[in-house]
Length: 209
Image 1: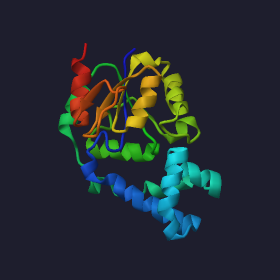
Image 2: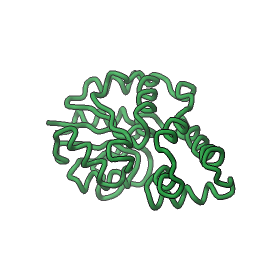
Image 3: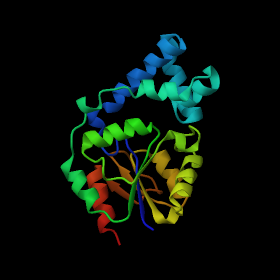
């Protein structure tokens, strides 16, 4: 079995599309308007929650008893098609790629489906694994990776992880996966290949031994 695991946001599309900035705004609004956290505290809490829990949601669930489904629906209610458009080059590269292709995201399935549709890639992936796969525990914790492997019936050594996040790739490597870093950030010893974009990553996957 050969499994190609792709991250979603800022991996399948360039961060310059600034789609995630729309989600950031929604997260801040949720914390202020729904949870009732003073605006002056939001940035500090988000940094603390990211450091301790991996995502803002983790902190809000633990400290404010936030309903994760309500949160996911609210923060992903953004106009995806205002920022994304079909990517025929990426579609061709994915179409030519052998093996299973799946999406693994810390976002929601609904958000992933909207992103894939906007990119013209809705039929290119056999599965979407979202933050629910390990009871809302996010990457880079090992739990969701292990849950994905169980769902796929695969070993880490059979998988390649394509990501824009070094911490997420570090966990993938620790579980035996090959790793591809997308973007211009600094690499690390656990990165097997670099790519400027998802299309280049897919082409590398197709041509590797």
